[in-house]
Image (tube, rainbow, N blue to C red):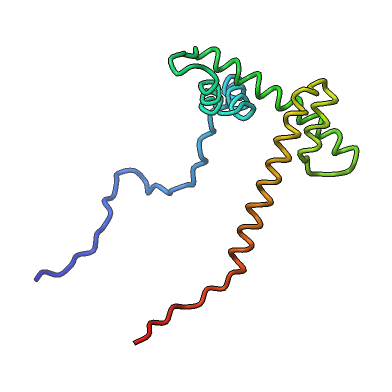
Length: 153
C-alpha cells in the first residue's frame, strides 16, 4: 500500500488571498402588493371551507362561480370581524381578556342581528350540553377500574 500524501492547496500567482467575511446580500424589499396579499390571506376564512359550506346549501348539480365564492369569503370574514370587535369592546370595558359565547350573542343583538342571536343562543346551549356530556363520559371512563385478566389453569 502506498502512503497517504497531504493535500497541498495550489498557489496562485497573485498575492495570498485572505478570506474576509462577506455581508449577506440585502433581502429584496416586500412590495405593497405582497403585503396586501399576505394580509388578505390572514383576514379571510379559507376558501375551501367557504366553498364546502356554500355547496351544502345548493343542489348537487348546481355550480358556484369562483367570484361568488370569493365574494362570500370576503363578506363572511368581514361579518366575523365586525361582530368580534363589538364583543371585544364589551370585554375590554369589563376588563376581561377572553371573549365568550355570550359576548358574541350580546354583540349580535347590539348590532341588530337579533334573529341570528336567538338561533345561536339555542346552538350554544346545545353545544355546551353536548360538551358537558362528552366531558362526563370521559370522566366516567377514567374512573372505571379495569382488573387484569387472569387465566385459570
